[in-house]
Each structure stands twice: as C-alpha cells, then as structure tokens.
Length: 108
Length: 112
Image 1 (cartoon, each protein chain N blue to C red):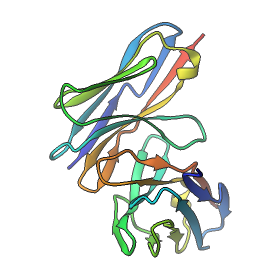
Image 2: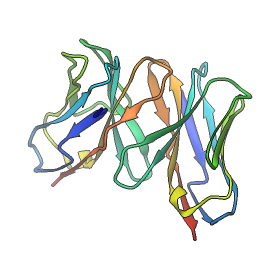
Image 3: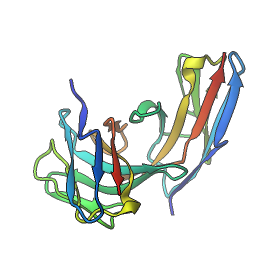
C-alpha cells in the first residue's frame, strides 16, 4: 500500500532559525513527489516536484531534496510569512497520495 | 485565468439532504479529483477522473457520486448527507499524470 508519513506534525521556529521537514514514503515505483503549502482556509498551493533520487529544487528560502525513501524540505532563515502547513504527496498510479502535513509556525 | 473554481464556499445541510458540490476548471486538464480534509487525517481521495466519461473510486468513496460529462466540470454529489460528511472538500485538476495538481479554494460543509 502506498503511504506517506510526514514529521514532525508541528514545528515552531524563531525567525531566522533554519530547520527541515521530513517526508518518508513507500510507493510501488515513484513517479513523482510533490510539496505543497497550505494557508488556513485556502487550498494547497504547489511548491516543488521531484522525480528522481538526488534531485534538488529551490525557491527563495525553501529547498526540497529527494532520496529513495524520503524527501526533505529545508527552510533557511525562515520569516513569519513562511508559517503554513506543508504537505507532501507521492504519485501512485493515477492518484496522488498525501501525508498529513507539518504545521510550521515562525515567530518574529 | 480562473484556474479551479469551487462552489459554494460554505454550506450547511440537514442529515438526509442531498446536494451537489460544483467544480470547474478552465485549464483543459484531463485529470480531476475530489478530496476531503479532516483534522488529523490529511487529504483523502474520494473520487477521481482521468478524462471525460471516466471516473473511479478513491480511498473514501462511500456516500458520494461523481460524473464527468465534460472536460471542464466534475461535480460531487452527496446522496443523503450524514454528520460524518462534515468536512472541507477540495477539487483538484492537473494536465497529465505526474504533473502538479491545482486546487480550488475548498467548500466547507457542515451536516447537522
């Protein structure tokens, strides 16, 4: 069965305090791993797609990396506006399977 | 460019009532899906479609029906609403498999 586990469930950081979010997965033949950001009351917003182990993508203070078993979302020198829930999803045949998300709070 | 549009944004139903949640996309995407999001449960797939006339069940399909008569629209029908269907519902679309999905803003449904 295809599964995605995200950790931690919640993370509190001080502004400027770098950290990483983890997404571990089991899927029969990875066809893509996706990171989304979700703000309260809104739909998920696409951040990154990773397709193969070793691949990395960056956007502003965020960098996503991928291994054969997990992905990390690294947040460098976060700001309060980075506060959101970050969702990870894997592509199974014809479906996206989501993790439960990590709620990130960045305090000023 | 509107993207994925869901209506209504909020809805309160009584147990046993039926209703249809609307979803429309203007990006000519083949794939469309419905998810529900509950606290502590993440996004769970209800039904999905890989093209007009083709639908299939996801993880939690019971109590819901879908149809896909056009590429643009993918309505979700609640046949007889139950309190367990209280949730936030998201519609998503994407061009082809393995590409990113675009989400609507969600419908918050309360069944009393």
